[in-house]
Length: 421
Image (cartoon, rainbow, N blue to C red; front, top):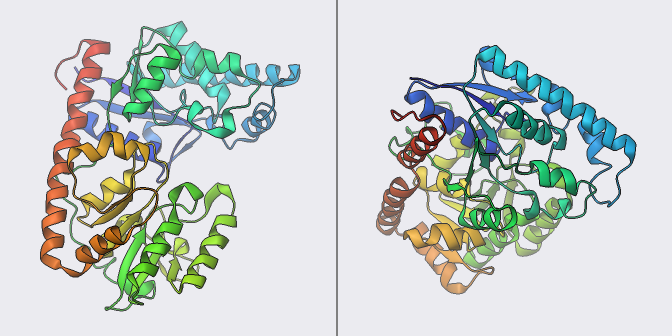
């Protein structure tokens, strides 16, 4: 019997990891006739299946007011406690409305009881599950104890209550082995590990006419070698290593293309990267103004491309991150059959590297050997093809929708008794 499943988070919109992975979960569930509905403060899904509550978004003014007064300090004002309780009470009422409106039988909570971007929403969810005992799955992407900004706070009582909550009706899912161990050690909670996935059973189609001119539109010639950094410009992405790579390759045909903007962590790192590239004689292109969530024309009539329009035109993906919860850009590089340079960040070393991928891997710094491996991949077409086909086969085995489908079958069976997923 098909289930009516409600997805809950602060936001289901854009290209963040939570929004992307939630859509994949919904697709796998839809393939087996389960129907998904969406609750958040920002939504880009069909309005017919959405319940939008602006106060659920972490950028809502009331949430921002509370956040300004609970993080980075150890004492909480009584007024803050009152407004926090008032908002969580209101959000709990909207959860009741969401479940009634769509006659839901299962909830999937996406990171909303994991990282306290909206503390009142997490509290509301915890109380709602306690009051209704509705079968629920909490999908955890990054816990609050993994982020420095949440270490000093005035809400330890609420964090213990709701991030994440413990309840027999609630099953927990994590995306890496370290998170699984931390959740067990810190909270005494068992969990199922489900990595991020892509649809490797169905390779992407070749570039269409719309995306055929990407390279020319971002100023590259036919002879240029495009090294794509498909991430936001934030320090943990280690983009200075990509600049160093191109400097060590020592040929002006290699161009570094960065797809995303600086985001919410300031622009100082952007300025530093610009200075480093200039000093090293590296041609760096910041193209965030030409990349969007959907294809469209900008105010000047120029094409806006999606990130997935870029991948097929890249010659190498640069992914020298210092830290990742998993690493979607790594999977996307394999999916589009593009070689990838990767840093041995902790989750990669523990969960991904043992799978047997063939990659140029740096260990916190670039060596001449790694640079020559990159050069080999870029300049030897036969070797390049051998490597990318091997990596695609490994990714299909370990990170495909089939992996997600098997895990979802276990989860749904555990909380509902349903066995036909």
